[in-house]
Amino acid sequence: MTGLSLSRRDLMSGGLSIAGLSLAGLTTLNLAACSPPGSGKGDDKAGSLADLTLRVATYRGNPESFFGEAGIAAPPYKLARTQFAGGNLIAEAINARALDFGGMSEIPPIFVAAQPGNQVRIVGVLQGDVNNQVVLVPKGSPIRDFKDLKGKRVGYVKATTSHYILLRLLQEAGLSWGDIQPVALSPQDGLAAFQSGALDAWVIYGVIVYQAREAGARVLRTALGILSGNYLITAAKEALDDPVRFQALGDYVSRYKRVFDWINADGDRWAQARAKATGVKAEYYAQEFREKSSPSILGPISEAAIASEQAVADTFAAAKIIPSRVDVRPLWDDRLSSFLK
Image (cartoon, rainbow, N blue to C red):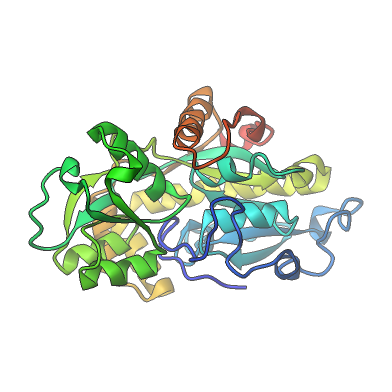
C-alpha cells in the first residue's frame, strides 16, 4: 500500500470525511493486509527482538526513509515500512491494529480520540517548521489582508493543520466560517484549482508551497504565530504494552531522533537526498530548509505540548468541526520519553 507525499503534511488523500475520518477507499481489511506475516497482535509476545517485525509508517521523501543515509545502522529487529499520504490515515491504521508507529500533526489524534478502543498514543514531539504552512493568493491578486477574503473562495484541506490555520485566521480577522466560501480539497486538487483561478486563496503546506510560488503565487501569511510547530510521533497502545515491542519502539525512536541531527547539519545534502527519493526539484527542498522557522528537534512529551494540543482540540470543538470537547491528556503516554532525551 503506497501513498505519494512530498512532505509530512504535503499530500493527504481526498475523500476524507470529518465525521468518520474515512480512509478514502482503504478499509480495515486493506490495512490488515499491510501487516507482514507473523507481526500481528500476540504473534511476537513471547519472542525476542530478532523475531519481531516493527510496523512503521513512512512518507516518501521524509526522515523515516533516510536512516541509511544518516549513517544509522540497521536495528536488531525487522522493519515493515508502509507509505501513507497523511497523518489521518496513519491514525486510522494504528486504530485498525495495522501499525505500531507513525508521525502526524497535532490534528489527527483529536479526531480519533473518542473512538471506542482508540489505540493512538502520543509518545514524543518533533518541534519543526511552520513557515512552510501558508495562505497563498494568486499572482496579481489585490488581496493584502486576510480580512479581504470575506466572501471569497478559500481552499483548505480538511482535518489537517490547513483546516486549523483557516479557523484561527477567521477568528483573528473577526470573520466566521460563513463569511467566506470554504472549499475543501486534497492538496493535488487544490493546486489544480488554485492554478486555474478557481480559488481566491489557498491554505496549504509543505514543498508544494514552493511549486506554487515559482509560478507566481504570493504568500499572504505564514503559520508563524498560529501553529505551535509541534508534530507528533505516535505508537499503538498495544505495542507499548507488549515488553518486546516496547523495547523495539524505544530503540527505533532513539535512532529516529538521530536522523534530525543529520538533517539539521546540512540543508543542501538533505535537499539532494529528498529530491533523489521523490523526483521533486531539490531547489524546492533547499528553499524550504533556508526559510524554516526552526531546526527539527525530536524530544519527549511535555506539559506545554499537551496544553498546545488541547488548545487545538478546543478550537475544533468551538467551531463544531468535532461534536464535543475532547480531553487530549489520555492520548499522551510518556513511556518512551527516556529514549528521546
